[in-house]
Amino acid sequence: MTETVVLKLGGSVITDKSGECAIDHARLHEVAEELAAHRETALVLVHGAGSCGHPEARRYHINDGLTGENIPGVYETHAAVSSLNTAVVDALRDTGVEAIGIHPLDLALAEDGRLVSFETRHIAEMTEHGIVPVLHGDVVMDRLRGSCIVSGDQLVTRLAVALASRRVGLATDVPGVLQNGLVVPRIDRSVAATLDVGGSGNTDVTGGMQGKIAELLALADAGIDSHIFHVSKIGRFLDGTGHGGTIIGRSMP
Image (tube, rainbow, N blue to C red; front, side, top):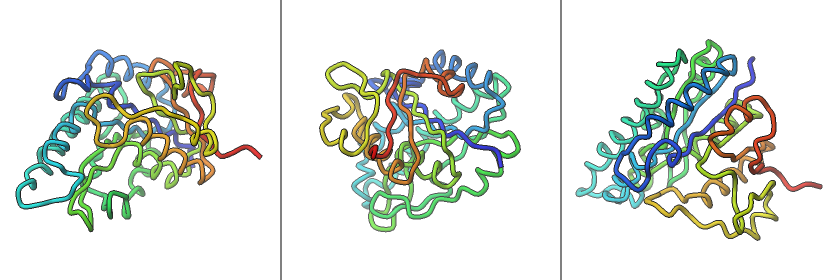
């Protein structure tokens, strides 16, 4: 079986999070060209929602659960993130990458905000045949709340474990996890306890950088390191060369 790389594009990388579904098509094209240059890599791509989904989720209080009044928000939120997913897939396909959009709403179930069911066998089959599945943060049904938002970061951790990936990367609009303006080169649970990285300054219902670190520390507990780096370093990450970002892993003995 080919080793699969799980790569996430942050929502702030491909949209203007201060706007409303303002897609950065120029950045998408740059990323697509880089991925096309590494088409030999078995890849699963995940992207955040950015300004396509977070505003709708907050407006309808999707993460608080379903009431009779906010049910339309399931459609509105999913439609917004799906439109971004289509743009990502189209950009990849324009460069010759065999990308296909996969919507978590169709294949995931959560309980109190955490995934309890998430089908991945078909995703593994796609990568074996050179297809690049493109998933995204999404609204999903929740057995306790009715609905919730599942972040792209939570999807990354589930996919990495299910696909036995040893290479997990998060491309962001910053060079790594920053503390006092400097990149923290490595984070484990002991280091994380000393950090004050803050959340997202824009509309974000999934926890910003703090949410990323929490998800990736759980992945580290499963023995899988992950890398956070600037989007301009995607090629270096895929090549296995230094990206100058942050590695999140288990505590060193």
